[in-house]
Length: 365
Ligand SMILES: Cc1ncc(COP(=O)(O)O)c(C=O)c1O
Image (cartoon, rainbow, N blue to C red):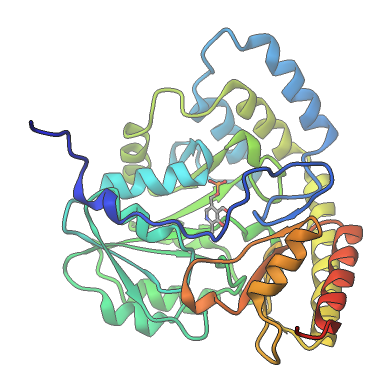
């Protein structure tokens, strides 16, 4: 009997996380595994969320009207060039669906954001990995693998899991080396945490070009990961294509209400930015004192290498998890000696340092 068969690319989709625990969110655990904001949303957002519950029997209003207007007011981008979606994941998936036909190539940095190849596989397209430089995106390496089948180059800047970034100059060089029919997708999920002076801003390149798109999220500094809200800034023609491939009402009433108020609450995001920077620097220097390698980060997480001695990342992961500290290891063998720690509260990070100290001082059995 004939069987129903899914597209062949779907069989290649792989899990990029190791050992995702199923019983998270217990009060006793410290969750440092998903780069969420431990500071949550502001109180004003919480009250907008509660008020939105009075309207849930209705479909949401059109996100591109109210939220795009609010984004336009805050960031000074024309509202017609903004598309909102169910997390930035939705927009990255829609871009891939719109611009990748079977057999087309999507180029990405080999040890960059691990979800990227899956955006190609679901469309029966071909992910092409460009070798990185010790986890950093390598512009020349990306340009060297671009062919006339390349339709998308997708990078996260700053990147996850490394936390590293490409300067504005490097991004411009990458863009200048691409053919005009190749879309450059700048996944900017962590852009609000950046303080590097040479970073520039991806919006500038979107404005100057016809083939550059920036995706953004409310899941990180805005503290709204659970509501699934993201947006994209793109040239008019790309914005209208991506709008047309979305589901009907891709943003819920509650996410819309929360997003609009979150954008007005700059004091909250400024505070989270500052706290993240301070706590990340403190945590990083303490880990360096313990002899661990800490990759310099421009995000709300740090990648930490367990490269010397007999203490492995696998053992550290187990030890921390047994003590209620949930951290992230990545499936790629390049990361087998590394753990990614989301920056939590000062207290959570101090507890984590203490457990790491204990772990490192134990003698191997
Ligand atoms: C680099 C990067 N891009 C995109 C996303 C997806 O974010 P969301 O769908 O929550 O907006 C994440 C989530 O962690 C990420 O790390």
